[in-house]
Image 1 (spheres, chains in turn yellow, green):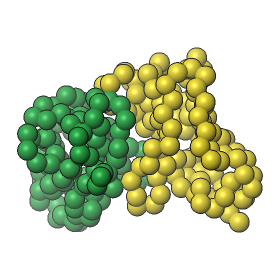
Image 2 (cartoon, rainbow over the protein chains, first blue to last red):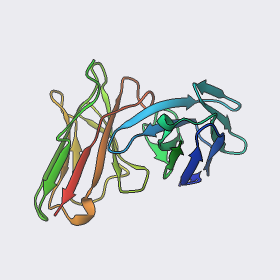
Image 3 (cartoon, chains in turn brown, cyan):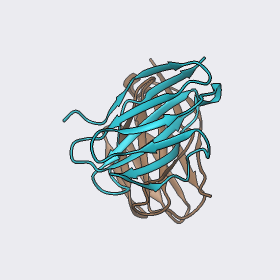
Length: 112
Length: 113
């Protein structure tokens, strides 16, 4: 059974600081997703990572994938308050199977 | 493009009642997925449907839960004889390609009292 673990689960940062969220998964996978969820809202897709060494960046967020280590990272650069949210990684074990396994999420709070 | 539409947004049911959650996929999407999110947890896969077919229901509880995606109309997640443990947010996602490019709806928050 595929397991996905994120850490930390809670993260409090000062504005302007950098930090990294880690996502480990237990078996080989076909693709990995990062989502953002604001309280009481739906999931917003941030990144889809398809291959080993993939790196994607959008604004202050950068995601990378190491399939050999079964590890993805979400790096936050110079955090701002608007980034406060819960971030989830999710893994599809098989291509096109339509079944993602989610981590428990990292709740990020950025303080001024 | 209205996105994935779920209704109701909030649903309160007494123990033993039935809950019906609706999901209209994005225009052009024929693949629908249901997930459940308990407080402080990630989403848990429940079921994957295409029009008139259940593709994967490995995450569905064996009893009281059922899902359908008819030829016409929205996908329905039905929970019979609800219990307090069914209280959660239920999210629907859709895609135009099986198992890729998911768009999530805003969810239905079910509270069982």
